[in-house]
Image (tube, rainbow, N blue to C red; front, side, top):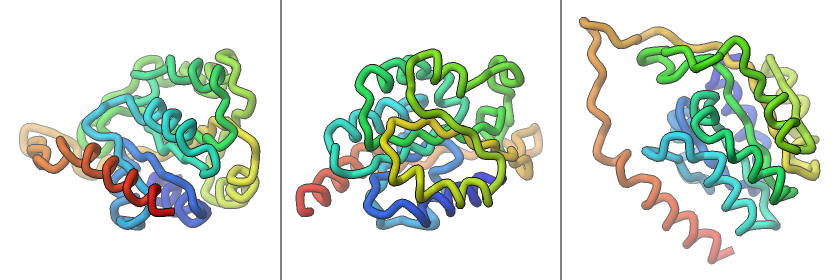
Length: 198
């Protein structure tokens, strides 16, 4: 499935959940749900799983959905152990496995990409619920049960990488807008304020 399709399905079923997004999922959350209870984990590369885990502990009565990248999780594999140890029942960790870093920019293969087994790693760390979906129809059918289940859950999504605008000598990387260096703090404050009002 495509990243945009997966994000659209997750957001359709989110209910009152907090959504933590990173990597490719950010732009789709921004487009589809700019006013939701969302926080983008940028520029903190690799931090989405740990940020979501902290939010799940702090907000035990509200689901927390992490829309993580495979490359991002590779940078923070220890979060699988922390998740298993703490075991927040309201935590669902979606791993968007497209096999690349910097999707649609450089598409650099992630280390051990073809051999890497996120479900196996999560199980070995002690996570109680792991599953994988390869199509939008599978994910859509599973979402009500995932949202209503007792977590923590790790959900690996098989995502088709995009490659329509790869970096090259003729297509240089655009500068990252200044907003991205401050947005996580701004969104964290906005999220805190909104949660305090509910």
